[in-house]
Image (tube, rainbow, N blue to C red; front, side):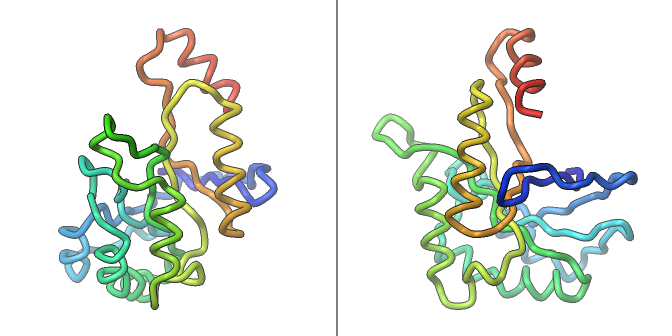
Length: 175
């Protein structure tokens, strides 16, 4: 990941001239390995779990994620890293969508309501949004920023199943 973010008013921040490696604690197995991890010298940030609200990804309930969170925060503190929230995926749970078990806001609301896992434990919200509508993507980022009062890092986005010209047009419009 590169250090690029949207601030609460959805304007881009100044990009750094040197790319920074931003590590992610992908899921439960990686939390157990934190004691053996070294951090790249240029790293300044740490991303939380990868798509915990999807069964096919880190697949963590907010309660499970919070139980592991103190170890993530301690690792970040030891390495002087700012912390991003778990990277929830924009999805809607439905009877036909067995992968998505919680909406991103329901998942984050539950996490932030748990003792020791409040909004004050993160410096920014991390999320993923897949689709081909740049306006919807920007609106989603704005909604998250307004709801949690934090900058939002959109660390994954794609119009992956569309023809290449549509993918390029989406990326150009969004960026």
